[in-house]
Amino acid sequence: MSVALYNPDILRLAAEMPHGARLPAPMGSSEKRSAVCGSRVTVDVDLDADGRVAAVGMLVRACALGQAASSLLAGGAVGRTPSELAEARDDLARWLTQGGAAPDWPGLGVFEPARAYPARHASIRLAFEAAAEAAEQASAKAAAA
Image 1 (cartoon, rainbow, N blue to C red):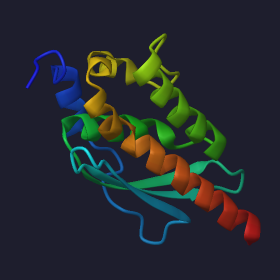
Image 2: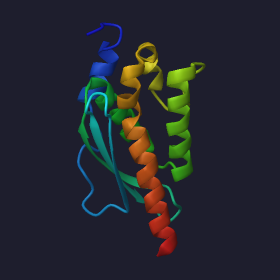
Image 3: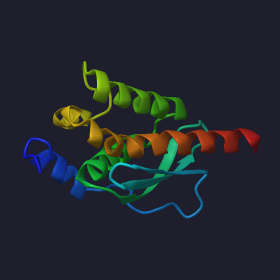
């Protein structure tokens, strides 16, 4: 285990999981799994009348990196639109592989040391991928109602 990779900030985030329970009847839900390490994250989303995330629920069975990323996602998802979640997902994936400035999501810079470990990227992306998909489902469900 690398000290630089599993730093105190990542471990603190992994221990602080906001919205750490599933929603009882979510408008959208998605589970993502990393084939590399077996980490699994389920994200539930409800949207408000304006199409913004009103509630988030999560079930996280992941390594410290996946838990920390889930914590950051959950802490910043409420109030976002499905398109903003999709943009954050894409920006995170791009930043992990290509570099540049950290995505415009509070706290993601903590994963800078993980950029050098491509095998860990999937676990970091799980919550953002699941949230974007769940929000898209919720948006489609709202549009059909």
